[in-house]
Length: 188
Ligand SMILES: [Zn+2]
Image 1 (cartoon, rainbow, N blue to C red):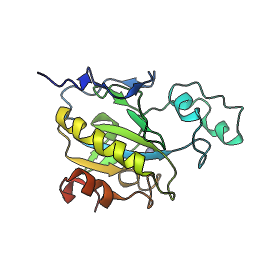
Image 2 (cartoon, rainbow, N blue to C red):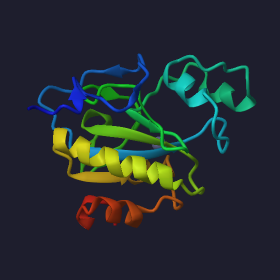
Image 3 (tube, rainbow, N blue to C red):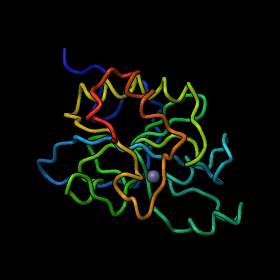
């Protein structure tokens, strides 16, 4: 029986929301990195449909002054975990999502090429919910069954000059304990 949780890079237990913002990965890429992010729209406000709309190029930019910055911006992540733990998937993990931007990990640039991006509904500086950790702790092992993951890190670690997410409110120790993975898989 081969990987029943996955079909062409889509996780069976995620709510599928197709984003047009993706492309092919370079041929022969080993997908070995998970990048954790935090996002909320407007920043710090939770529970709206705006992140889904943003990742699918349907955000109504007139709705909020902050959204003016986002007009024409095309981004995506593979997964989005809402405050209540609900898991959404926007892009097949076999494809390259547009979440990391200019970034470097262990000497390799363009982390989007070889990573899976997981956005948590949140804000750098805020804490995350136990339901979000539970969802992450159930998702990462099934990802690791399908892809040769080596490291799980934050956006702030691969683009330190530009990004602060998920920030100090995210507990890497709690994630590590929940997964039972070795500490060298995570940020220092
Ligand atoms: Zn980010």
